[in-house]
Length: 360
Image 1 (spheres, rainbow, N blue to C red):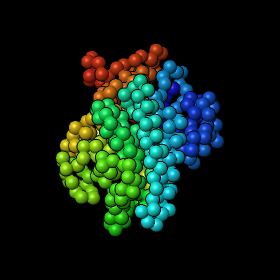
Image 2: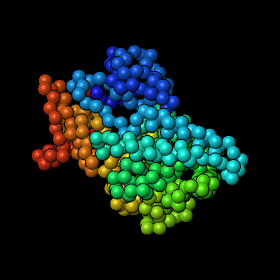
Image 3: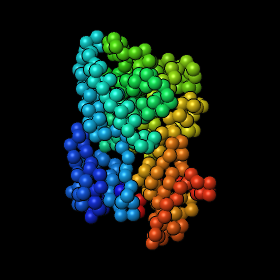
Image 4: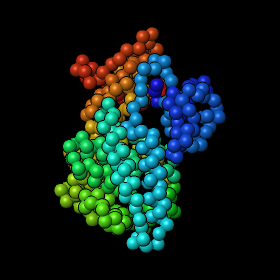
């Protein structure tokens, strides 16, 4: 198996991993031989990547951090939350299904605990229209993974609740602003900047929500250098748990499509956060979070500075830029009769670097 951008999908290729809609129904089942109608459907749905069968890496399994059941239940719950919030006229009338939120957080924790890999795999966001739910779920997955592996114990659940509901206030932002396909005007941006305070007001209606979860919702757009909002907090003024969610929120937002821009590649978001560490974001929090993301995820075709090309087969925690690769093409671009495995984390391979993501 390996990943392939839909724009490079060709008739006759075989889909190796079933493609699901956000509601959990199968769009194209595994084993389907691709026809033009399948390519057209995937493009219309806004799906960016698929997993195809490739005999050179038939032994490769593309990891998933959460189960399909958890994904469907989480997205369904988040739609319920955002729909119910958007319909009310008074914040005092909002009711959050808090038991459902806690159950989803526990399911994500359980799924992550069962995974053999420490690296987090996020959910593909096919369309900006699905952004609010899928983004909230992705932020929760990455935040929970970071918190539980940092040994935060009971606070991990608070991180999960805060991350899952961090954008709940966005449900009260008018759609014509939230879904605008273009740059926001200054007054529109000011409206968007109200969503952390709105989210805090919503969570205050839930007596069982903790002060930690409320701090996360209110502070997830604060920045280490004081450039964030709503209060312009800086450094240690920002709650440590909110710092985790702010980094996860930024990473996930950059790698998901928005109405006004295309998504960034994982390595582009990774590089941005590394460059912003110690300035816009807390250095230790960025380092602690990025240990669990892969700039070059398993199944991705990459090119090395030597000219060699192959597919990423393994990514180790903290070594995201030094994956193991199965090399298919030599430095001159010629297909190898016998592909070989190359671990960039080995000392003898330190001069080899991934330079770009590519396809055949």
